[in-house]
Length: 385
Image 1: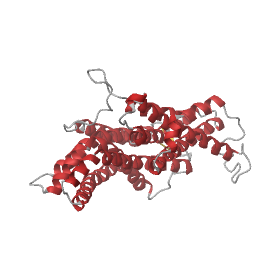
Image 2 (image 1 turned 30 degrees about the horizontal axis):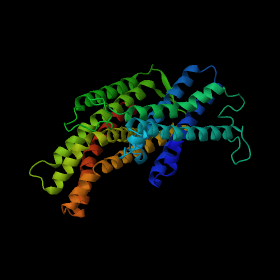
Image 3 (image 1 turned 30 degrees about the vertical axis):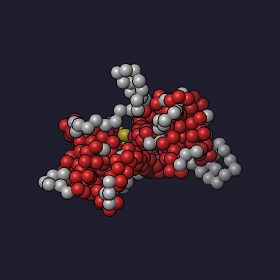
């Protein structure tokens, strides 16, 4: 009840983020129900049904990633003076943030169920009654427990991830402080990230050239792709996420190279301090963008296997990863609000702060854009052959 009251009194931007979490949960729930409908309509193709269900893990992971970012930036659950005295310490506030994510995710799952039943023709009185009855196996009854399990997957996973991320860390004297901030030392994930990207490209190349590998049906068409291609892309995405903080830290170091002025020094130091907070979302966005470029390159001369459900899943991944990056950027801006206010009181011109922000964005674009293109080009070579 307290989480619902906090949601009602939140800033419109915060409410928009929660509605986006609900919309993403609705999209994932609808994809999962469509995979269930395919399994009901094709009882003899259990392998293809499991693979279609597995394909939904990508938008599910993107939705969970976005939900965690929204929970981290929820201002209504930040510790304030006096809240601990009334029983709202860091642990209780983390539970409230997770409850808010659970509420948004459950709302999205309910919308997904209503829309799915409406398209099947089980609900009437609205436009598009039964317009997808054949595709969604309307002639077969839905197993209740399977439907509830699939619809609960996104809310439960997002809630558990948010609670795990926001849990307070106990100090040596037994007290609960906030979740630990990023340490000042440089990130060290670059070697592991490079290794994972290399392994992912190698797996993708081997799977693409293997004619006898298992197929991976896309949820909207009856075409297929090698399973290893998706596994290779997952390794590549993980590698870019791991390497993202180190690359962002390198961008900050690069800005301060060779006698930096005040603007370059300020921009570089901020990037170095925020490398862990925005580096991982940047790496994920880089991976998604490279996948989009690869798909465009591969299918620009031939028939595209992108169906309506495949398009929905891809749109969910792109929107969620982009929104996660923007949310992480907003979190970083809020974290340095005290520093920014101090600089303004010391007489720093607003133009200097804007120039530093533009320089940070330009430095990240100058490094991550070529990296995205290189990964996409390397991934497209075996798929185009």
